[in-house]
Amino acid sequence: MTKGNIVLTGQLHIPIAEQVHFKPLLDAHIAATKAEPGCLFFEVSQDPSDPTTLHVSERFRDQAAYDHHQQRGTKNALGQILCAFAAKIHQTS
Image (tube, rainbow, N blue to C red; front, side, top):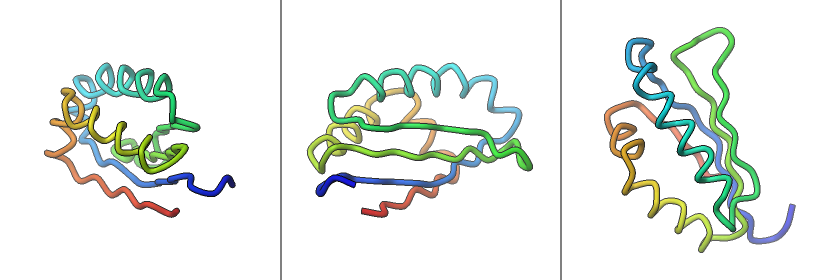
């Protein structure tokens, strides 16, 4: 791993009834995040044993790239929706 990378993993818990509204926003967020210059890796996958749980894995070049991602995320519709759900994201480096 390159020194300075910011790595995060976590889970989002989205009720099945909300996923129909959430999925298009998530897809747009994933595409926009992957296009950010400092994004090295970004993946969201559904838990095979619990469809309400999404696993998130992120890696950014450095703190500045992560800060940019966070700033962009708080301004979009997905960021506002995530505030209503239990999101557990942990920084590991």
